Amino acid sequence: MGQTLVYGVLNGALYGIIALGIALVFGVMRYLNLAQGSLIILGAYGILFLFHLGVDPFASMPLIAFLLFLLGGALFWASFSRLIALSEAGRIKNSLLISFGLMLLIDNLATLLWTGDERSITPAYSGLTFGIAGLRFPLIGCVGVLSALVIIVALHLFLARTYFGKSIMAVSQDHEAASLMGVNVNLTCLVSFAISVGLASIPSALIGLKSFSPTVGIQWFNKGVIVVMLSGIGNINGVFPAGLFLGIMEAISVYFFGAPYREVTGLVVFVLVMVLFPKGLFKRQEL
Amino acid sequence: MMLRVEHVDVRYGDLQVLWDVDLEVRQGEIVALVGSNGAGKSTLIRTIAGLVKPSGGTIHYGDALLNDKPPHTIAASGISMVPEGRRLFPKMTVLQNLEMGAFLRKARPQKETTLDWVYEIFPILRKRSHQPAGLLSGGEQQMLAIGRALMGRNDFLLLDELSLGLSPLLVKQIFDVLVTINKAGITLFIVEQNVPMTLKIANRAYILETGRIVGEGVARELMESEHVKAAYLGMA
Image (cartoon, rainbow over all chains, first blue to last red):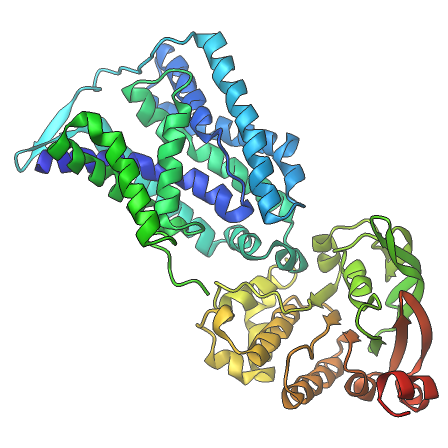
């Protein structure tokens, strides 16, 4: 049971960090970026490519993060930026359409470039584990949790302490009022979008070290979006604990019902939470 | 001349709401734009702030042409706005809202001094500084909206429908504050439905009816005019 929980926490941290990118864009702009999963997989191919050149996957993560950041900025500039003037409902619907197309484009491009075969990044340390108190901890998973925590704390500090971060929060609450304060709303949205795509680089490495193929992005996106809903929409701070919650619930279900029921349990938990706590598990009282 | 609006037309799609609007605001003045509901007052003030683009005419602030500038550039060039409905950041605390007001680069170094000044004008905001803005009363929210605009350290303030939804006592209190702010050297352009209150503190006023300026003059004299008395002051 203890060992099951370890895996639950490790998976949950991955869900949490996937959800963070989705939550940031949805919270600030009300864009639902369906292509986030595909961008994660695209990053994984980038890390794999560098790995074949002899670069360690964790070492290449910052470079991939930067490239994804630029790609995110370019995607926003080319397509998503036009939706800002729309109503909230219009932004959700149209961003779904654009990002769905983008997802098809990236998935097919990846198939074309790298075939549909399942890939995996396999550095020498990929199978290593260490033991504490009779439990086995996979090294890669633990590094993943640590990097997720570091990024979440860094993002929180950025949003809460810097002028630019505060302007992101202001735009998310009232973009017109923010513009009257002197905030360049278009630029703020572009940078938030680029950050969220850049954040995909962490799951890129973690998923890359498991296994991936061109079309699995949407499955990871699904996990992420479930975590965003569990956390409560607009609540970025609740995303990580919500990810852990989903990971642990899945792990417990594996322990009791066996692995085939893992996905089902995750979805049942999701539906139950939505019925019992429609505003999410960690949503603070709405003002 | 601080603000000069010349021959401005505004349309929303096929619907024209402002026709050939001319007005000017000189440094240090309190100028009011009065008119009934739907006359286009808010549209005009939103056009000056850059939230609505004019389809014709020019808007100058000093020597700068504002027509095509986005709102954040207009804010940086010296015009702040207290929008209709306060438009606070509801999940931020009072203090965080005020800090957002000091977002402009030139306002940042003076943030602490300006904050003290705003707290001096509205002592209640100091008491509420760590409460979320969304939990304040209507009057407190309006004070915070004014305070937030003052934090930008701009010399020109656009005020849109401050009195909406406030008790007469609070309206009086807030209009007294406007006079204080004006004495500190800030030029005010006020859009209001509360005509008597506004004409009492304004130097000059314009009357907007169905999208056109139909009258202008010294505020005190306008109060005496038969048209204003009949249409806005309820004196037949």
